[in-house]
Image (cartoon, rainbow, N blue to C red):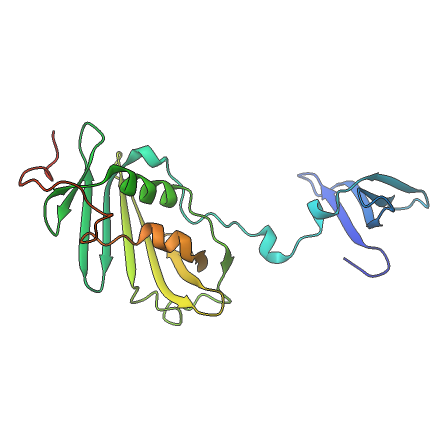
Length: 211
């Protein structure tokens, strides 16, 4: 964006040849259109609003996907905090069971919500740098390991809370960026196995996989 010309857009092909070069100006009088001028032309066109498509901040262009996997392929969830470790496993009937710290049948909707949230977890923003210790990601308050049907593992670390934004710093172990997630995302993932929402009926052998 330049004050004199608005947003300058250049589109290149694979050989770096310019396919399109134009300038997007101010919004039209109806607030639903935009002025546009092609490079090398004095003709100004008025067309549907396209400013938001091109006029973005650096953060808008960045990939905000933290984790991606089909939710129904998750077979094991391990939630590790400073207070201990909770392990949940799915049997052949797609039923979730708590296997650690004790054996109990889990509330399916609670575990499914965790798996669904993790499967398409998007960032709300980014940390200003990549210093894991600065955001307590070297000693996270919560680490979640997801094991899929093909035995591939994905691991998420959640560090300290940004009190001003009411968001939490998070990192996919396989990616460089440090992300910010919302409190609602954190609360969905961070279920305590001892709480009434995290488990169902107890059973001495219920936690074992029915294989």
